[in-house]
Image (cartoon, rainbow, N blue to C red; front, side, top):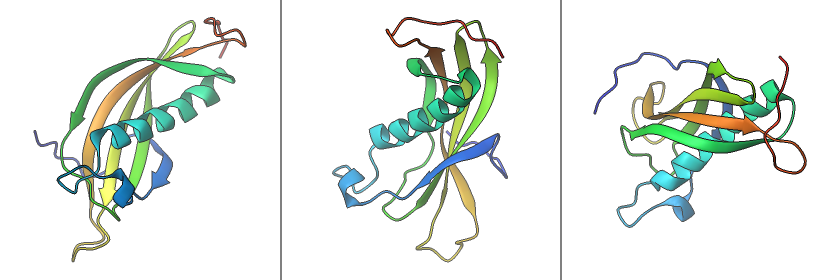
Length: 131
Protein backbone atom coordinates (compact mmCIF):
# COMPACT_ATOMS: atom_id res chain seq x y z
CA UNK A 1 0.00 0.00 0.00
CA UNK A 2 1.43 3.35 -1.02
CA UNK A 3 0.37 6.71 0.41
CA UNK A 4 1.62 9.68 -1.54
CA UNK A 5 2.06 12.68 0.74
CA UNK A 6 4.46 15.57 0.52
CA UNK A 7 4.46 16.45 4.18
CA UNK A 8 3.21 15.18 7.54
CA UNK A 9 -0.18 15.98 9.03
CA UNK A 10 -0.19 17.36 12.56
CA UNK A 11 2.66 18.32 14.82
CA UNK A 12 5.86 16.46 15.55
CA UNK A 13 6.07 15.37 19.18
CA UNK A 14 8.79 12.71 19.13
CA UNK A 15 12.01 11.97 17.24
CA UNK A 16 14.33 9.03 17.65
CA UNK A 17 16.75 6.73 15.85
CA UNK A 18 16.46 2.93 15.87
CA UNK A 19 19.52 0.81 16.62
CA UNK A 20 20.48 -2.78 15.83
CA UNK A 21 18.65 -3.88 19.01
CA UNK A 22 15.36 -2.86 17.33
CA UNK A 23 15.62 -5.08 14.24
CA UNK A 24 14.00 -8.32 13.20
CA UNK A 25 15.66 -11.25 11.42
CA UNK A 26 15.34 -9.42 8.07
CA UNK A 27 17.36 -6.46 9.37
CA UNK A 28 14.37 -4.10 9.37
CA UNK A 29 13.03 -2.37 12.46
CA UNK A 30 10.32 -4.33 14.30
CA UNK A 31 6.75 -3.20 13.67
CA UNK A 32 6.23 -3.39 17.42
CA UNK A 33 9.02 -0.85 17.95
CA UNK A 34 7.31 1.51 15.49
CA UNK A 35 3.96 0.95 17.18
CA UNK A 36 5.46 1.72 20.60
CA UNK A 37 6.77 5.05 19.32
CA UNK A 38 3.32 5.83 17.89
CA UNK A 39 1.76 5.07 21.27
CA UNK A 40 4.23 7.29 23.12
CA UNK A 41 3.69 10.15 20.66
CA UNK A 42 -0.10 9.91 20.86
CA UNK A 43 0.00 9.74 24.64
CA UNK A 44 2.04 12.94 24.78
CA UNK A 45 -0.73 14.86 23.02
CA UNK A 46 -3.48 13.07 24.97
CA UNK A 47 -1.80 13.91 28.31
CA UNK A 48 -1.44 17.55 27.27
CA UNK A 49 -5.12 17.76 26.33
CA UNK A 50 -6.47 15.87 29.36
CA UNK A 51 -3.97 17.45 31.76
CA UNK A 52 -3.37 14.13 33.48
CA UNK A 53 -2.91 10.40 33.12
CA UNK A 54 -4.16 8.54 30.06
CA UNK A 55 -4.26 4.93 28.92
CA UNK A 56 -4.36 3.48 25.44
CA UNK A 57 -7.67 1.68 24.90
CA UNK A 58 -7.73 1.10 21.15
CA UNK A 59 -5.46 1.04 18.11
CA UNK A 60 -7.22 1.28 14.76
CA UNK A 61 -5.97 0.53 11.27
CA UNK A 62 -2.25 0.49 11.83
CA UNK A 63 -0.65 0.35 8.40
CA UNK A 64 3.04 -0.23 7.78
CA UNK A 65 3.87 1.29 4.40
CA UNK A 66 7.66 0.98 4.11
CA UNK A 67 10.45 -0.61 6.13
CA UNK A 68 12.53 1.37 8.58
CA UNK A 69 16.29 0.80 8.84
CA UNK A 70 18.92 1.27 11.51
CA UNK A 71 20.02 4.89 11.57
CA UNK A 72 16.88 6.36 9.97
CA UNK A 73 15.61 9.45 11.76
CA UNK A 74 12.10 8.52 12.89
CA UNK A 75 9.65 11.37 13.49
CA UNK A 76 6.19 10.90 15.02
CA UNK A 77 3.44 13.32 14.04
CA UNK A 78 0.11 13.55 15.85
CA UNK A 79 -3.18 15.09 14.79
CA UNK A 80 -6.21 15.41 17.08
CA UNK A 81 -9.33 13.83 15.58
CA UNK A 82 -11.95 13.94 18.34
CA UNK A 83 -12.39 14.68 22.02
CA UNK A 84 -15.11 12.91 24.01
CA UNK A 85 -16.04 13.15 27.69
CA UNK A 86 -13.04 11.10 28.76
CA UNK A 87 -11.60 9.83 25.46
CA UNK A 88 -9.31 11.32 22.85
CA UNK A 89 -8.85 10.04 19.28
CA UNK A 90 -5.52 10.85 17.62
CA UNK A 91 -4.19 10.06 14.16
CA UNK A 92 -0.49 9.28 14.13
CA UNK A 93 1.98 9.25 11.24
CA UNK A 94 5.54 7.99 11.28
CA UNK A 95 7.94 9.67 8.86
CA UNK A 96 11.57 8.82 8.30
CA UNK A 97 14.56 10.63 6.91
CA UNK A 98 17.22 8.32 5.52
CA UNK A 99 20.66 9.50 6.55
CA UNK A 100 22.63 6.86 4.67
CA UNK A 101 21.30 7.61 1.19
CA UNK A 102 21.91 10.14 -1.55
CA UNK A 103 18.52 11.84 -1.03
CA UNK A 104 18.95 12.75 2.65
CA UNK A 105 16.60 15.74 2.37
CA UNK A 106 13.57 13.62 1.46
CA UNK A 107 11.17 12.35 4.12
CA UNK A 108 8.95 9.31 3.70
CA UNK A 109 5.78 8.28 5.47
CA UNK A 110 6.24 4.72 6.73
CA UNK A 111 3.29 4.04 9.06
CA UNK A 112 -0.12 5.44 9.99
CA UNK A 113 -2.71 4.65 12.64
CA UNK A 114 -5.42 5.98 14.89
CA UNK A 115 -5.07 5.58 18.66
CA UNK A 116 -7.75 6.19 21.27
CA UNK A 117 -6.79 7.16 24.81
CA UNK A 118 -8.94 7.49 27.93
CA UNK A 119 -8.17 9.92 30.73
CA UNK A 120 -7.92 8.16 34.09
CA UNK A 121 -7.77 9.19 37.73
CA UNK A 122 -5.25 8.00 40.33
CA UNK A 123 -7.20 4.77 40.87
CA UNK A 124 -7.18 3.90 37.15
CA UNK A 125 -10.85 4.70 36.57
CA UNK A 126 -11.96 6.86 33.61
CA UNK A 127 -12.38 10.50 34.46
CA UNK A 128 -14.24 13.28 32.71
CA UNK A 129 -12.14 16.26 31.77
CA UNK A 130 -13.05 19.76 30.79
CA UNK A 131 -11.31 21.43 27.91
